[in-house]
Structures are given as C-alpha cells and as structure tokens.
Image (tube, rainbow, N blue to C red; front, side):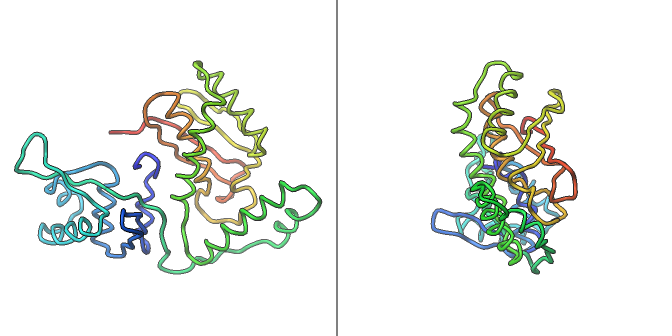
Length: 258
C-alpha cells in the first residue's frame, strides 16, 4: 500500500491522520505518533532506527509504538537476521486527514456556471465531482489517499485494455484512453525520465486554486498502469497542476525506491 499512498503520511502532520485498521478507522493526532508513522511510511524499520530518525527519546518512541500496535496501525515481526530484534511496519493504510484549521478556499461562481451551461451530461458529472470534493476541502477533509487508491484500482482494470509490450505503444494507447473518456489531453514530455502532461484535466481543471497538486485519482491510475507495464512498483509525483495555477498537470513516473 505504501507504493500507492505517494507519501501522504506527511499531510497528517498538520492535523488528524485517519487510518483504516482491521477493526475500523483510527485517528492519529499525536505529533510523536505522526513522526513515527512518517518514518515508517518510507519502509519497515527496527526500533533503534525509528528512534534515530524520529529524533525522539527511546522511552517516548516505545510508548507511542505500543499504542500504534495496539490500535492496529503498526505491526511488528522478528528480524530475520537477529531474533532478538523486532521490525516495525505499517499495517493499515493512511486514508485521509482532517486539517487543524479549515482552509480558506475562494471559489468562483463563474467557473461553476460554465459547468452547468448547456445540455452536455459530461459537464454535469464534472460539476458533481467538483462540488463533492470542494465541499469536503472546505470542511478541512482530505480524501486524496482514497482517490489515489481508487484510481489505482481503476488503473489495474484499465491496463488490460491498453497494454502493449512497447512503451511507446502503451503511451499512445494511454493518450487515446484519456481522450476517449474525456479525462483531458495527455501528452508525453519525455520517456527518460518518464514524464507526461495533461491539458484540460477532468480531475482538477475546474477546481479553485488550492496551492498544491490535486490529481490524486490520476496519479493512482498512472501508477497502476506503469507498475503493471514495468513489473515493479512505480511512484507518480505531480509537479504541476491547474490547482496550483499552472496551465497543465505534469506527472513524473519513476520506480519506487527501496
């Protein structure tokens, strides 16, 4: 799951992080626990390394790790190289967060009006998606991890329809898929590194300015497609976005680091 979350653990640091445990959703607000989870989001670690990387005292880390294990967010296992040591890892995915303060989002009535002008049903669904997302954002609710994971599941299904042995052919098929489904105009910027751009983006093109990337669903789709193609986990980072004031969305796709 870490490969799909794309480092979203960092967002929990500004408010409450929500995790989907086997027994239900658990909220994490403690800064100490958030720091531990941010470290474990990168990879599984032994206790001493968690202490070192979190900058907390051993006693503090021990207490909070026990709490996270008890809540089902973190799990532990015996170190294969040293049975006296334990390795800790994330057991439950980060599914979203609640901001410490409600963000100020300046919406545009004119922008909304353009989406309801005319009989095009596509515009209505775009408006519906936009309204739900903006309403949640105004309440300080971040659902990017859920959107990314949903996109990943969609991407796994999409791949069978656009798969190709050759990367260039796969990219052509992906461009056609984006266009056919009104997701925007996808263009390849480069293949080494692999970078794609999307113009007239369905996911964020109508959103107000958020000051951060907003295409979590697209990141999930692209992550799944290229993970399947390269047969190893791929990380997708969005470096430009309409929600940041750019005139396109830009996605950098690269292998996940160990």
